Amino acid sequence: MTWFGWISFEGHRVALYFSTPSQSDDIIELDDEVVHVTCTHLHVGILLKNGRVGVRRIDDLDGKVEMLNMEEAGVENRILVSTSRQMFVVLVHKGRSEVLRILDDAVGIENLKDKLKHRIAFPWPVKIEQAAAGHDFLIYRDSTGNLFSMGTGTRGELGVGLVRHLDEPVHIEQLAGIRISKVVCGGWHTVALTAAGDVYTWGWNRNGQLGKDKMITEVYPILIDPLEEFNCPEENVDDIEATENSSTIIVKSTDSKNEITKYMLGSDTVPINGFHLIL
Image (cartoon, rainbow, N blue to C red; front, side):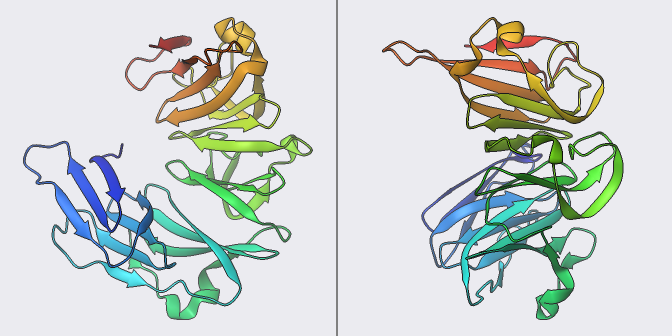
């Protein structure tokens, strides 16, 4: 789901579906297999299997996709991620990673001829495996389970205290020594799942998306107790999801049925301080 509707992709094709009747759906044809799609408020970004990135204005129906060449010696992987107004590519080398800002809605596509100007380094050499983003912040997970954050932190969404803005990734020290296996972001909050099956949340809690009896803003990671929240054993937590103002904890039964149950904290429609069971 996106602010304008939703996006799907398969093979060499990306489809934009608009929720407003006045806006026609759009199909974008590419010359290589699509591996990931993201969008800001104004632009859609498309990562191809060959490593190139295509960018186009969302409202420029049938418009030309501008292709950006991300080829670079030693790059093993590329991760495309975006906030509501900026787009980034994480270049993953053998022993290090760096972030390349490729677009800002306010100015358009960055001049990549001067790549060094827009390169953002991590505190130490890391291999980034996942990147997630909210409205104006980003969270990165490396191969050892460390988390790094950058962007706006006025609602605690960075997990490193109440800060105005961070232009470079910083390590979330409160989770040091805890191996994170997955991280997801809502509009202004973050949810992290550990390799041991624990769940941490932080950021804005206006709609109860961080759990019961939590502060309106949690600036550091706090542990969720599934037994207290949902009356289910915490060791059964299998996955996590997040939307604008909600967090979903996915629990798998321990019996042979392997049944999946989803528990939601918060709501994208009604402000609450509790959870919903998603049937």
